[in-house]
Length: 409
Image 1 (cartoon, one colour):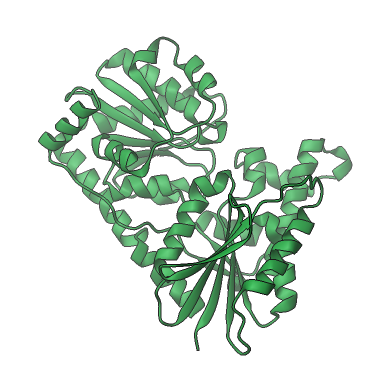
Image 2 (image 1 turned 30 degrees about the vertical axis):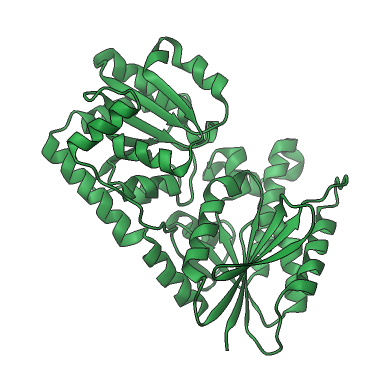
């Protein structure tokens, strides 16, 4: 008997980045299987009316966003989503059902489906936690807030505590929690009180599209983008938000340029360009802001780059880091939350401590980037090889698929 697997996605900022990539990888993993039928429920789709479409290997349900004012009525919208799926989904008596949710605000939707399908299996995948945005991933600060008297907290701090409580209730309600990193695995037990028997650790995986060019081919590609063959390219990919740490990279790049003018910083992503440009000061001619790119163009930059840098204040299991490994890039990343476990001790990169408003962090980052870029060709080749091996061993689509099939079947 086939399992009916319902995978929920939404149109929102997160879907453009990590969660959208995750949904695409899950479709790759589960479509066209003989032991299940995959249903992808797209909430907030840019369609005028509800539609059900048969796609290659799965069914797609496009649910339009609400077009009338619904301030404070999000639960009503999720109720309507549930009723639409009750009418149009596939629910044969006796078939096993699996529901995979990816957004913490979907607790009302989880409740609706669990009331209707008490024997179904309900999974929640943690791609982000709301408190991380308000506290820049500061776990100690979170601990102090949830232990404090509510009356002593500011409104923003109370908001952090409220989001923590909502997440805790969601974790209690579902059958299984999938986390993407060892950091979150430990956090769920220590801060949220979740039993380890309820948690599965499944890192993100990515379909292998890595391409590797000879030096001559890389130089040809550089020329196409009007970079000189001798330039060392430092690559940042991500939203231009404070939580991604772009400002500390710009400061470190200024230090690098004072010592070696042969570096170029490429910043791929959209967001707060004005703050970044103001931070660049006299280095504007050496910093390229591309905005958000199509995948084919982004992959060109992975092939041209000499190093990838991720100074984020918080990540779960970064697809950008996985892409950098897939293309065999040496890396320098912050030690905050989950990034360090992807790189630390792996011999293809370095980690640095991210401290707020710390010149020491900037100096350390600049030094580590220079160490990689000025190392011997033999050492750089070894780092590239080890980076690629890390992808193949832990973050490939095949590894991700194997773990999800083990969980669900």
